[in-house]
Image 1 (cartoon, rainbow, N blue to C red):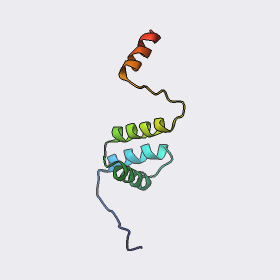
Image 2: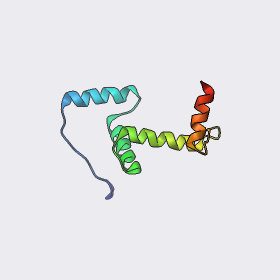
Image 3: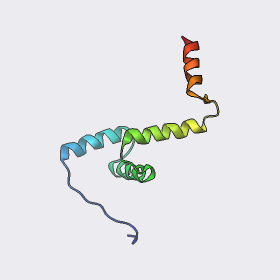
Image 4: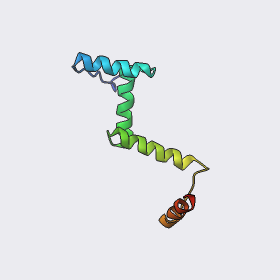
Length: 85
């Protein structure tokens, strides 16, 4: 094993593990890979909150969308909402 690698070992409830494994397996993943990706997300976004991570990803996707609607003020948003009623 490389010197910059570590082996992690922990004990957990068997039913919780089996339930988790069943869920990630349905998505074509495995437990180890899923946990590693989760750790990478925590490091990348400096937050363990899954909802926050999804919100950040949504904002990043919107920034890349050339067809997104851009507003110069909150009044523009309100005017558009009023026009759509």
